Image (cartoon, rainbow, N blue to C red):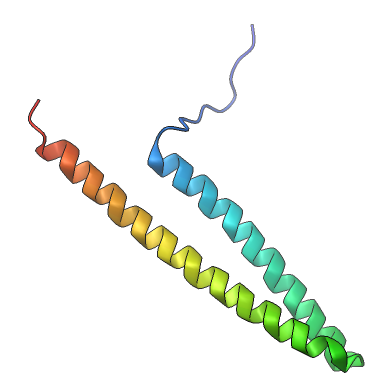
Length: 90
């Protein structure tokens, strides 16, 4: 008999939001590391890569701001949904 190791309710907003947040965090870390590597390469000799490194760093900062807004607004929406469920008469 097969056992399910991890059960995720994909219809719960908190579970979906957490998964998207983790995925975007991984993308953000990868872009940041790549930007740092390009900056180090440009400092060590190839100055042509500096513009691309700066653009990647700005894109990482934009991703971080967008992720912060997503988490903030998602938590606010979930709080409103919980309050709505509690105030709803059964």
